[in-house]
Image 1: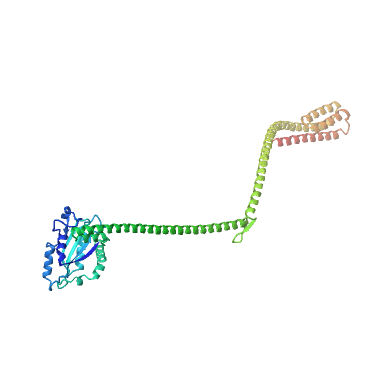
Image 2: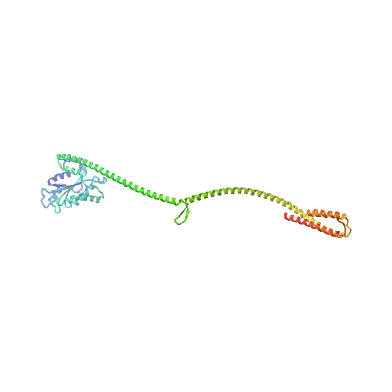
Length: 443
């Protein structure tokens, strides 16, 4: 992008005419006269390059030799990667400032920016003066300046703008700058040669580019293949690791299965628990017990139903017996009430009999006929019947027969009569006692 060129005294007019566009016709066909008005300077000077050089030559303390380098031009092209949102003038101003700082003793002759050629570029011209004002290109521009110029300019632009742009002048641009100083005939011939060389160089560069692309593609393919191989190797290693883990888990599960498959197994803390076979046997046993319990439950349900049926029958029977007992109790109560009435009447009759017995005793001393004894026997028999006692009736009937058929009125009659009456009274008392017992039961 940058090129430093030396000029002797005989070349100054051509240089100054070219940079200041003072001619109406130029041998360089790349110049577009319609755009020449767009050219500008970035040095801030008003004098022409000739005036400025003459002034520097007058200040030289020694005579300038004919073969001396009287001026040098730093041709700098606008980088292709300069941002489009920044004006090219900013770049050229930075370059001129860097050049002034690089050659502080040199006299600036003009920094002209050409916008009328193929590529915008600047010619920054200096008179090679030293501290004393003498012309000495070797002292002010040694080879070290050539070697470090591009790197220094690159760092300066990056430091000031923060941008990294290319500052190297390519071969085509150098050729164009060199051709701009030739005459028309030389320019045409050189132009053709340059175009041929440029074309061949472009073809070579394209071939080299294709080769470089092929090399890069090959390297990329190699890197991709290496990456795929590494990825495949990692995947294989991962698969092997997973396989080993799965095998370990499988073996562990198998050992656990084998350990738990028996009837019993022992835990780490020493407990003995049922294994798979033991649990299966226990399950079958429990299933049998459940089946048995279900059968027993069904049997119990049937027995309960039968028992409930029996209980229902028994309840019915108890209810019937209770009803019957109630009726019997009512009948006994009624009988008891009648017996009480009869008992009271019998008591009265007994008292009457006792009174009668006393009367008979009183009268026994008198003569008693057989008819009177029979009458008494009939009365006593009716009393016995009223007592409702079988034994009493039988005894009374027996006494009645004896009295009616065989008893004789003699001296022993009173004693026999007392015994008879005693038997009658005992029979009546037993009858009364039976009636009392029946009444208590009924109550």
